[in-house]
Image (tube, rainbow, N blue to C red):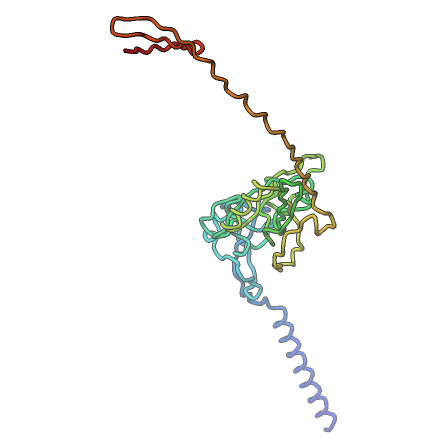
Length: 287
């Protein structure tokens, strides 16, 4: 009898374990319902300044919990907007990588509201040997040479963003190593007042760009201009003019009046006296 109860209890336990295993298997093997959402992504690489068309976009499914901030759920919200930051193929298009609506395309789309784009002439030295690229930040130094041969340099702009170098807008663009030409123009993003100062500096002296660290946004106080004296070089002295003393001119010779020569002739009413003074002749009538 005791053995019969043990077998019954064992059978019940075995059956319960079998049912529990089947339930766990069915629960884990059953497909889970996903909370997904369709977001806008790029079909190809989108460079800076490109205006997005329908062929540049596609929809991909993404778990709602993985939805990044700034993602678009409709392609209509992305069309005709320009790319401000490069977007790779199959990458989700975010609002922070696009320019505002109606801002145009190309360089125009990169100009922030209230900003101005000004191009300055650069060369191998003033352009930091080509290491200045779009997206980098620079300071602008101004050097002026005076009429006495001395010169002075001062910083007129700080932490200015480079929008383009030559015609290149994309900082990650590959440069053809066979191309030996160097860009000669750098386009800077400035305010209206900074634009006026930059243009005037280009007319009155030389401009030099100084590359900054991308994480350094500190604006230092502008001190006095650096002159030759700060380098231990004395200012050139102007030669003293030589004063020449001219002798006084001799006095003019005295005027000697020629003696008058008189001659007379009789007339009916008296006598006419002719007086000769040099080559001058005067007549006087004496009664």
